[in-house]
Image (cartoon, rainbow, N blue to C red; front, side):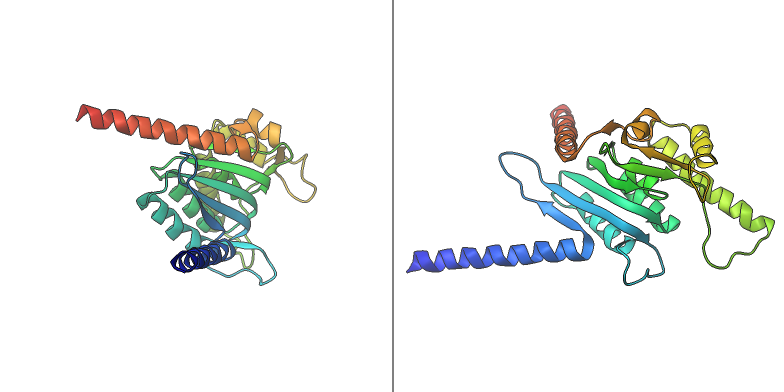
Length: 245
């Protein structure tokens, strides 16, 4: 009787855990992967659809809310998480929100790996390179274009200067966290021969790596392998520092 009650309790706990995980995926695109076979505790984050900023996007639009991701990233920095895997498939969105997420990822002490699936366009560029190591699938794409403004725009010189400053912030961040130069980024941004309705450049998987924007072409298995490698290096470094004390 006691065994049956224990098994029923375990089954109920599993159902509750699954419910919590499904809710986390639905609301925040996040999931803590269970530690198994001596592996590490990994936090999975997804950046899907449009990056939503201070204004809510249309109800029919897939969106990633930065106010959901920032607390999750802060929690991962402080809890037992060993590393973070970030999956990206985004058309871009709010510049300030995208840069906030990218800066947060770049400032984490825990190892991070990003994987571009489908695309990581516009402000998705800084998000892709913000991790310690980045992957893109062979069919993945990245579109690099100048900063654009939607809605009302005051056509005075101060407005254009502010847009240039914002663009400099983006290109500087990408250049500092990848192997592409800021000058080459501007060349790709202002290319008028590739995009039909806009200036800019679309890079496919291999091209993004050749330009130095992304570290390597690969998929989910390579991303996990690299993340475990980075975690092992961090743990080994920590052990050596403890031995010296």
